[in-house]
Image (tube, rainbow, N blue to C red; front, top):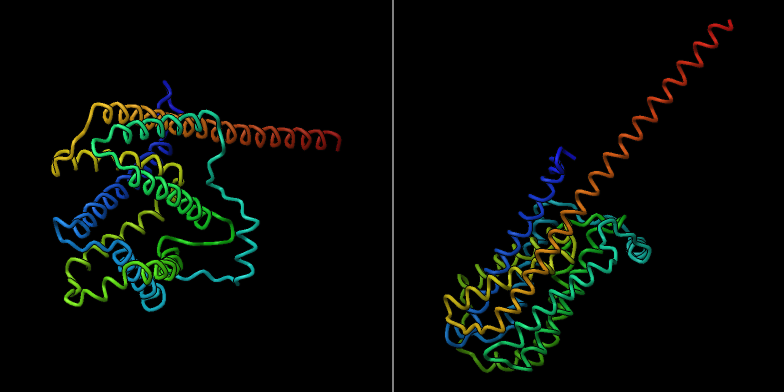
Length: 311
């Protein structure tokens, strides 16, 4: 730690890298969400089939990941037996997990309160839409925690590409069940539809990059950090909707966003203080170890001199 509590080069590097990962993820997530709205919106591209669109994304991601792993061999697949992998998962110890702290919990509650107030002040409030969003938040939180477990568990060396190599085909299989029930009959009747390779190809490429960014961000930071970063992404989406799409923003919305902003600011402050404390502890430990080695060397020299005198 430098004079006056200045940040060391190691802490600055960690901060810059973390914010770089967050910025990349926010940009790609924002791009995919706006692009998906363009495709799904009946007033724009008018292809209202979200399950089919997600399946196209997963098909593209799975194909590209298989090519990168199996054909071009840019990365190596996980080389361990299934039973060994299961044992590692069951007895895992995640080195980057977030320990429970009361102040962190209150911080998350303050952010959630701000988001809830903003949702309550929505000009076009829809109960069913809120229920769907809450369900999506729960599933997304579970997904991010499971991704963090896969990326940080000891004995399992997954990277963003190999993670997508295993996850994307599974997602495709699970999505096929609701797709067959809900959207396939409608698509079957719409025989005039032709797949636009430019639109869906670029959209799938953005989705592939976003999935890689998700695995990268969670692996390098944590699922909690990504969820907090998601609040910032939501602000950008709201600002875009207000300025470009001309959606209505009420005073209650602004008040809720303000509460959430204070919560995010405090979270970043807490993470910065934790990095400083960790760096200071690391330097203290190194200094103690160095002092211990010097003391041992002096004692060794002293005992050697005494032996020489006795001889």
